[in-house]
Amino acid sequence: MTTTENPVRNGVDTATLFATLDAVKQDPELAKFQFRATNRWISGTHNRSTIEGFYGAKQEMAHHQSFTFDADHPAVLVGADNAPTPVEYVLHALAACLTSGLANIAAARGVHLSEVESTVEGDINLLGILGLSDGVRNGYQGIRASFKLRGDDPEKLRKVMTQSIERSAVFDILTNSTLVTVEVDAG
Amino acid sequence: MTTTENPVRNGVDTATLFATLDAVKQDPELAKFQFRATNRWISGTHNRSTIEGFYGAKQEMAHHQSFTFDADHPAVLVGADNAPTPVEYVLHALAACLTSGLANIAAARGVHLSEVESTVEGDINLLGILGLSDGVRNGYQGIRASFKLRGDDPEKLRKVMTQSIERSAVFDILTNSTLVTVEVDAG
Image 1 (cartoon, each protein chain N blue to C red):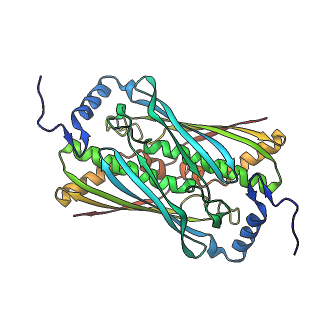
Image 2: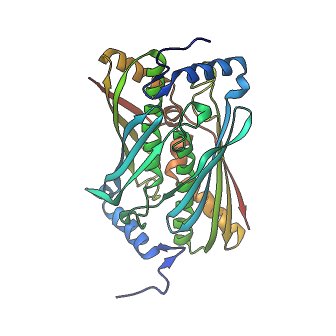
Image 3: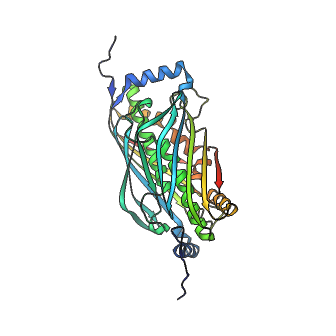
C-alpha cells in the first residue's frame, strides 16, 4: 500500500477525490444524479422547502440530516420578510458552486488556498414580474460576481478560478437555458 | 376613507399589493432592484453565504435580519455533508418562486388557495463537472416540478399556475440565459 504525504489539501480529501474520478471513469453510470426539493406554502409569499433525499452512484441516497429553508418577500415587496427571496437563493447557489469548485480544483492541482471571499450581485427590474412591461424580462438582467482569492501565487489562483467557472453546474444553469416542465394536480 | 371587507386573501395583503402596483406604474424607477449575497469559504466544499442588504424602491434596504446559509457536498461527492449542494438550492429557489407567485396571483384574482405543495427534481450527469466528457453539460439536463394545488375550482387554480410560471423570476432565470461576469482579485 502506498500512502501520500498530505492527502488532505485545502480541506479536500484529494485521495478520495481522485479515487472517485477513477471510479466514474470505469463506470459512467455512477455519474447520473437526481437532486430534489419539496416545498410547502405557509402563507402569502412565505413558504418552506425541505431537501433530504437524492439519487446518485446508482442508488437512492440521503443527506445526513433533513435541511429546511424558508423563502419570503421583504415588506417592500408585500411580504413578511421571514426569509430571503427566491432570487437571492440563486445568488447564494452561484457563489457556493464556484467556491466549492475553487477548493476542489486547487486541491487537485496542488494549489494552496488560504482565503476565498465573494460577493454576487444581480440586477432585476420588477416591471417584468409585476406584468407592467412586456419588454422587461422576469429574471436577472445581469449578475456580477467578485472573488477575492489568497494563497499561492496570483497566476495559479486565477487559473483555478477560470477552471472553476468552466466546470460549475450553477454557472452553466444561469448562463445557458434548461428545460423546465411543470405538472399541476389541481383538485 | 374607504375600506375593503377582506383585504388579506391567502395571507396576501391585497390592498398593499395593488397600492404597490399603482406606485410602480406612476414611477417605474421604483422597480429597479439589486439583490446580493456574500460568501466565505470554510474548508473543502463547505462554504457559507450571508444575505442581508439589497437595493430597491430607489434606496438601500436590508432584511429585518441577516440570513446565513451553508453549502457543501455529500460524502459521495467528497464533501462533509454539512449542508445541501449549490444545485439543490436552485431547486428550492424555483419551488419558492412559483409558490410565492401562486399566492400573490391568486389573491389578486380573488382565487382562494388552501394548499400548495410541490416537488422539484433536477437530473444532472456529473461527467460534465468532473471534466470526463465534453459532450455533457455541467448543469441540470432537465428540471421537473410537480404542484398540488387545493382551494377554488381546478380550472381557476390551473390558470393561476400558468400565470405564476409566466411571471416567475426564477423560472425565467433557468429557462433563459443570463449574462454572468466574474471578477477576480488574486493576491
